[in-house]
Image (cartoon, rainbow, N blue to C red):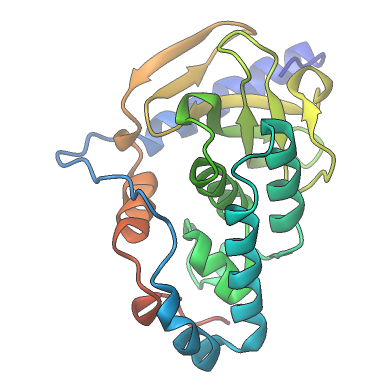
Length: 237
């Protein structure tokens, strides 16, 4: 993601690198990634009873998206998934979940019909994984949104390890190449296989396993054990 604001970019990069490193810590036990991100469909009635008919409709649409998309091209999968989740309302964590920082599961996002950039990116990542795109092609990427002057998360897709990635962003409906998004300054990225700290363009530092991110551990653990009867949605404010 090239940026042409050199002095501003270097200052922002240094600041966000410090923030990124503060987010990292070593965790002893590695949670398993769920093979299936969807709870038992027999509990749809419970979902509707607790969160309404629209929540059930969103769930069923999500399942239809996954089941009918496995044979599509990667670009078609990216487009459908990006469009589907970008219809969900953007809500800050403190207003929606009542806490400063919370990474929701795809089920929590759909049941509550709201979330922030991390929630959108996580939902897109796991849905595309369910549709057959390998983890090595996808990364959850923390960036500095320069125009908003704030941290932001997007999902990036790499056709090959060295290709210019595509950016799936809840703030911009059109999927664009990273090289076209000079409003975004990459900080670090991760997937189920690794964690990387962005440095200069085309140069990044591998930091090890993604389990160094505590929020990633938490959301993976919830996805791995989630059943509709136990969907844990904090009280909405």
